[in-house]
Figure (cartoon, rainbow, N blue to C red):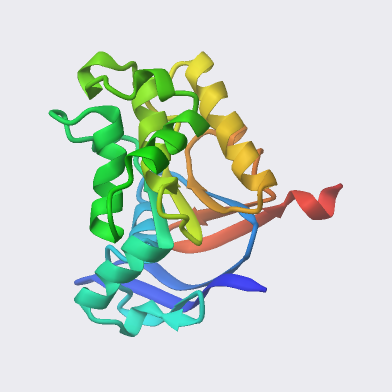
Length: 223
């Protein structure tokens, strides 16, 4: 069963087409990578899937709802309830501890639960860093806080933008192992990346060029 379907979506900014007639489906529990050179449409696609933008044309069916037709208010609710976002730049609140940064996501969803937030940090190996500010954490640790924050509300889809882009090799390995475990547990993952080694972890890789799908590499069929 598909969790996400893009049906002939296009996005233009004046005379510039960031995406043009793109169709794609993502099954529940799938790990999909999106690759392509700068300007290929990766960020635009991520923003549309993540309810941060809407297409100029086409349908975006997320968990049976066409988010391309929803109001801004409803998009905010869908993003909060259905999507866990992991950013390259982390976007942690600098004056809040790691624990409090995770609890912020709970606050906007329902009610903060310190015990549950601490369990989310423990899941990414950071229970002992819960009281540290972002400035007291390494880049890899900050990214893991970002992942814990993304997971705290049990999203239907985890959407990650260059999640290893600012990490050294050791921390990249830690983050990728967390993603592997999430995939084994049945989470649906979409990872936007420039790194071929990161993309190779996914079951399929969609390669964009000039706003169109240039090819799809299906590793499951290659086995």
